[in-house]
Image 1 (tube, rainbow, N blue to C red):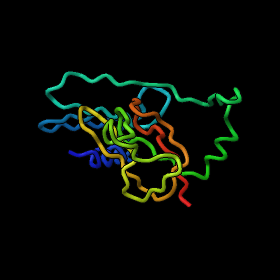
Image 2 (spheres, rainbow, N blue to C red):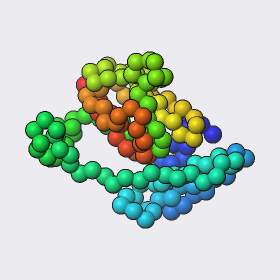
Image 3 (cartoon, rainbow, N blue to C red):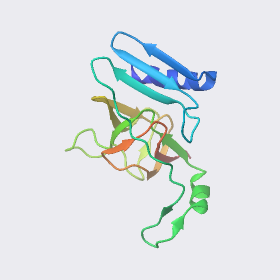
Image 4 (tube, rainbow, N blue to C red):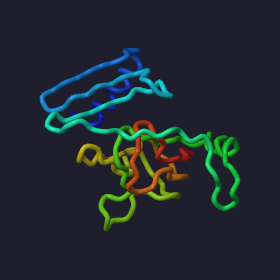
Length: 164
């Protein structure tokens, strides 16, 4: 089962209204729970290869506003209004994000890079597998929201893109 099939399964379960779906195949076990205890109704997905023991997942609280390091002011509503015209590219999986194909290569995209549908934006490592994260839209990268080698969660914003 590849990452696209897992993503489709997550979307299907979220739309179906089912509270829990378990899928076991010969080398993979997937559990998707919606409405789980926490602060969101987004589906939670656990993917586990059978030979491996349990995986621990990292959880973090959402950030409502952050401080602008140059001025020390809290950035909030006005920045959200500015970002409303942009498309947010989110993480389809949980893992570690890498902005480069390898340590000695340049980053896939930077602020100002023009992208088209299908371009690789970054790589996310999940369970020792490196998954290319491709753009589903064309446009220009306005903001990179995650640092290189950072852990990311499902549906976490990664990039802001100006589609115009």
